[in-house]
Image (tube, rainbow, N blue to C red; front, side, top):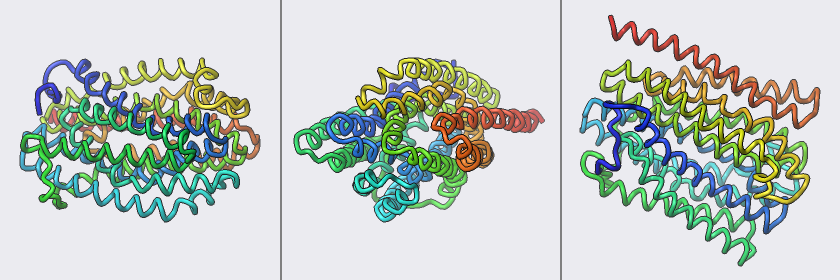
Length: 450
C-alpha cells in the first residue's frame, strides 16, 4: 500500500488525519445508500405508490438481517488495528485470512435466510396488502446479492484498519454508476418496476465484490489476500467475534426495534409507508456522517491502544465527538428546514409528502444527538469493551422504542407522537453511554498509571 492510501494514526495531529479517514467513508456511505435511494426515486417517479412503498419500506427488514454480520466486520477492523499498532505481521495475515472466510460464509447464510424468510417477516410486520407482493419480490431478489455485499464490507473493514478509505470509495463510485444506469434501463425502458431496481442493486454489489477482491489480491504483504489460504484461525476468530458479535447484535436488535416502529407506520397506510421511506433515505445519508466518525474512532483508538498510547485515545474521543456533532448537525438542520424540496425529489404525491415532512421534522432535526452514544460506544469498542455499549444501546434505545410503540402511541394514535420516540431515545441512551465511557476510561487510566 502506498503512503497515499494509508494514515499514520499513532503519531502527529489527529484532527486532519481523522477528516482524511472520515470524508471518503461519508461519501462512500452516501453512494452505498444511493443504491436504495435511486431505487426509491426511480420507482417513485416511473411506477406506483405501492412500488415505492415496497422498495422503501424494506429498509428495516434488510437492516435486521445484515447488521449482525456488519457488526462482525467491525471486529475485523479492531483486531487488525490492534495488530497493526503492535506491528505483528503474522497476526495481520491470520486476521485477513479469517475475515475473508467470514465474509463468504456470512454472505451465504444471509442469502439463504433472506430468500426463505422474506414473506413471513413482511407478513409479521403487517405490510399492507397492496404492497406485500411487490415487497416480497424485491427482498427475494435483493438477498441473492448478499455474498457480494459481505465480501465488499469485510474487505473495506480490512482497508479501514490501516487508514485506507479512499479506494473503497472509488469502488463504490464505479458500482454506483452501474446501479443508476441499470435502474433507468430496467425500470423505464423495460418496465420491470420493483424487480428491475432489485436486479440493478444485485449487479452493483457484484461489481463491488469483484473490484474489492482484485484490489486485496494485489496488496503487499502482509495485507495481501491469498484465496487458497482462506480459513478460520481460532485465536483471530475468537477476537473478531468477541468484538463483532456484540456490535452486530446491537445493530440487529436496534433494527428489530425499528421494525416494530415500521409495523406501526404500516398501520397508517401505504401513503405513510412511502412517506417514511422517503424520509429514511435522508436519515441514512446524515447518519453516514456519524457512522464515518464512529468508524474513525474505532480504527484510531484500536491502533493507539494497541501501541500503548492511552492518552492519545482520550483525545480521539473528544475530536471525533466534536467533528461528528457539528457536521451531522449542519446537514440535519439544512434538510429538515427544506423538507418540501428534498422530499419532492422522490415523489410528487401530496399524501406521501405530508408524512415525509412529519418524519423529517421530528426525527432528522435531532439526529445529531445520536453522536453521543455512537462515538462513545465506538471508542469503547476500540478499547476492547464491546458488550458494554451493546447493553446500553439495547436498554436505552430498543426497549424504550418497544414500550413507546405498544404503550404510548396507541393512547394518542398519532404519527407525530410515534416519531417522537427517536429523539427521546437518543437523549437517554447518549447520557448513559457517555457516563459509561467516563467510568471505564478512569479505570483504564488507573491501570496505566499504576
